[in-house]
Image 1 (tube, rainbow, N blue to C red):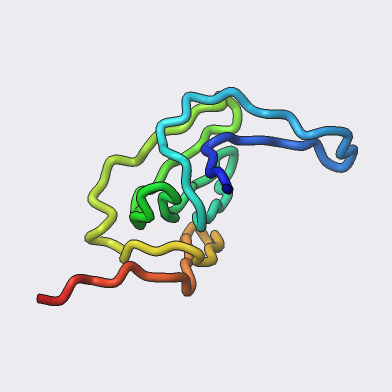
Image 2 (image 1 turned 180 degrees about the vertical axis):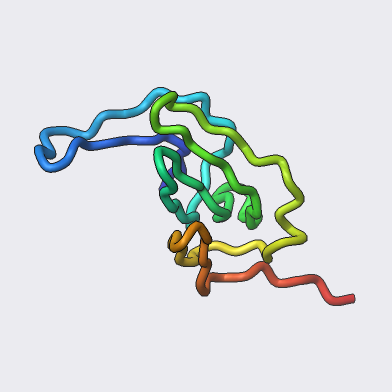
Length: 109
């Protein structure tokens, strides 16, 4: 059986000698299908899905690469974008663009 993790690793370029696990204050659960975009010395982790509960995730967290800390941005992201996984994301001109992905099916009653 496969496992899902919430760990973070880095490798120094261009040497590529070995991968190093980064000790962080991880504030988010294990996930799949998320995206990461960089902005300055930080990166944004966007969405995804919990492999265990299969629930889609709309949260956004920022990782500070100098302090090795995550901060979950407290906002009701569900009002701004649909829960999705497997999407693509890019940062350009101080804007994050998200394309495609699998969107959580809304219950129709």
